[in-house]
Amino acid sequence: MARYFIFRRGERLVKGPGPGVLILKNTPRPSIVYVCNLKSGILLSILDRYIIRKYLSTFFFTALLFSIIAITINFSEHIEKFIDKPVTKKEIFIDYYLNFIPYINGLLWPIFSLIAVIFFTSRMARNTEVVAMLNAGMSYMRFLRPYLVSSLLLAVIYLAGNHIFFPQGNKVMMAFENKYIFNNLRVKSNNIHLFIGPESKVFISNYHTHDSSGTGFRLEQYQDLHLVYLLEAKTFEYLPKDKKWRLKDYNIRKWEQDKESFFSFRHQTLDTAIALYPSDFVYYTNDKEMMTSAELIRFINYETERGLGASRIMRSEYHRRWAEPFTIVILTVIGASIASRKLRGGMGLHLALGVWIGAMFVFLSKFALTFSTNLHMNPVLSMWLPNLVFGLLAVYLLRRAQQ
Image (cartoon, rainbow, N blue to C red; front, side):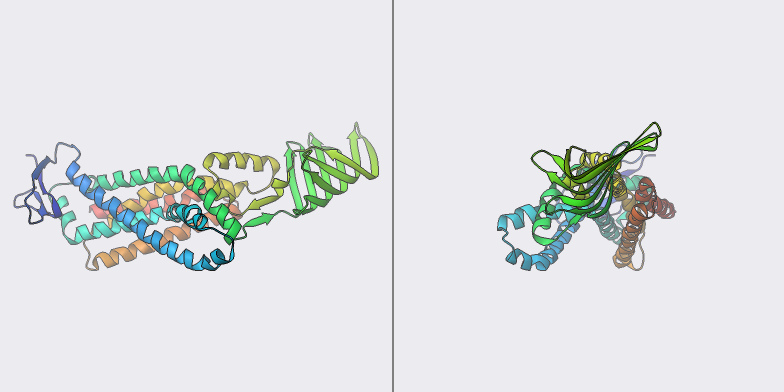
């Protein structure tokens, strides 16, 4: 015998007068009654749209509320710099804050999904809507279907934003930050080791950014792991017009067939073109956030070839962009599993659990990033570790919720 849902457009679901019957309570105005077959396996469009609408509206309302708070705090912190620096209103509101909104929201989309799910599901549980659905014969996995559809939709949007759209906005926003707010410029100035080729290495003792010059230049070339060529210079400088380096007071050593040759050129100069540029010595701490994933991969390959050592941080950022969208789905399952149970503490207890789980996720994510960059943990494993841990938690809570 088939079971049916009876829906009315209104506020909440309650159990109907007969077995396997649900009624969606209506406002005082009359409306249409819909009947859907539970056993047919057809997507219950009315019920799905009801939950999806609640999920997405609560999610974006949470994001909007947080955006207003974040902009208010950020503006109050930086208003003195806006007044002191020669910055226009267009730069502040269009270049900076228009791109600040997706940036600050992109950091916390998984947490927003958890809070949104717990908030509206707790209200449904308090109004006995969830109990009515399950008592009418709906399986718990069927109940989760609209949650999963909504979370997958948000995950796809978040994935595209992480790889393409967020970095493009960050380029404009962080260019403004670097110019007017923060000094994120960093310089490699002492004891610099760079690979400029598969078997070519450069060492620089001191480098000065103001005139692209320095002291203590050393170029080494290897063949089959044996040193065959050594060029040393006391001072050097970059020639921007010729795109060459001028070496002064230099010496050359060569090793050929077990014979060493030495040439000294005191008070002489040598102009040479090598795969080394002043931009290799200067970087911004937020460079990785301003690169799309395609640019990030090219930069990782470039840094790896030259042995600059920052590629581990970049690889961690690249894998983070893949891992975090899946976090939305995991936290959605966790939130629904917690909030669908009607407890004495109600929504307050559910929200408290949600905030605690969200805090633990952020805490574990920061630890994973530290392990990846400082403790030489595999970047793929470290960035996916929070998902693995919370994925196991989601499976456990889901099984308990089904009981």
